[in-house]
Length: 443
Image 1: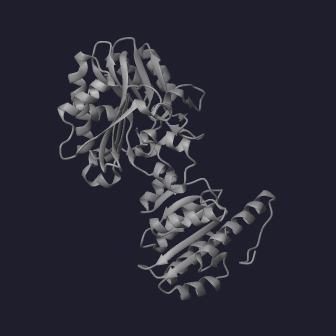
Image 2 (image 1 turned 60 degrees about the vertical axis):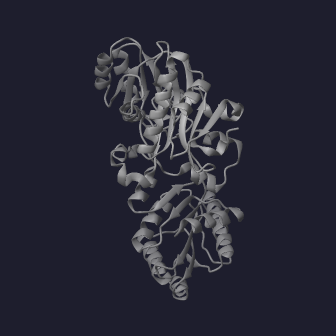
Image 3 (image 1 turned 180 degrees about the vertical axis):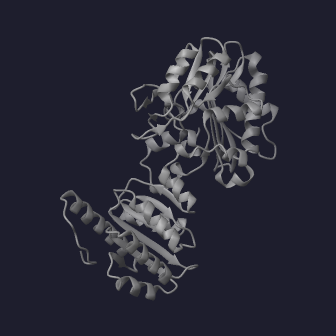
């Protein structure tokens, strides 16, 4: 039986079935390069995978021209937004559906004009939606059969697996939840690859007709080749179709790439569309910060991913909720701290900030002075709980206590977490009744 936790295509089902911990939230939100559908189609075509004829348009006029060049009166226009559920989404101007069937170049121009420059809201984007900067115009192909196929990395086998299902062209998360036996998993030995026998077996088990087995076999092998050569972390085809004229085509494609492979996948990373990413996370990456926005109200500034996870856990254990994951790294320079505070305090929900730094590479007194400078420069009124441990921690404690600012130096982790939660609750209460509040460690 397929385990839901193995791959991103079924992550939503796993998330719905369990109350996600902070760790799983971070796993789901981890930044990996994703590219638009039209780019995925181009890449797959270069590997010999069949895709419908189509091209991208960035203006309504371009959409009309592309529709004319494709020919025919049966086309599809797809909003290029990096989110699932586009077909059931709605644009901020009221237009329903980010994927629509069109019957003429005139309709291509009309719908492109209503999509480009507007935000599409889907079940994955949140209420704010994501901006559509382009549309993909492609021929409409009629499928005799629709399948699901993905190549993923599996922690259990410590290698790639091919996940496939005869129930393609639909919500695969729902299939995984309701009919897990309909999903097959085939581990692949990276030293052997996808042999003819493996690929034929998958194609046969999926249900391709006899005349399409060989083409389906080649398609599966080419998809795996793309996965390996391009450092892909997720290659998902839904649906992989057998058309009415017995072609094997990838009707829709989703590719994600390993961020650590950017140095050797420069072409793929040149396709990155930052307009589809969280602006704060993009800004954080520019400053060398690992930042992921969460739903809570206690800002976290920590050096080291492990310490950051522990900090968020102890906040939760004390009844609070972290507003972010933020790892400033081993250096934790004053410039990095300032950038971190700008990111944290830009969230209006943040009512307290918990700074938890281990001074190993850098001295605690230098961090303390950096904190003081940032609070003075930014005129911050949000209470800050600072737990600085390591080199020169006594001097750091003295600097903070003598600063006269709303920075509270606490050495014990449990005590610091408790105070962070208490301060946060007081600030939220004060905001609700619109009054000022003064803080002491005793509260």
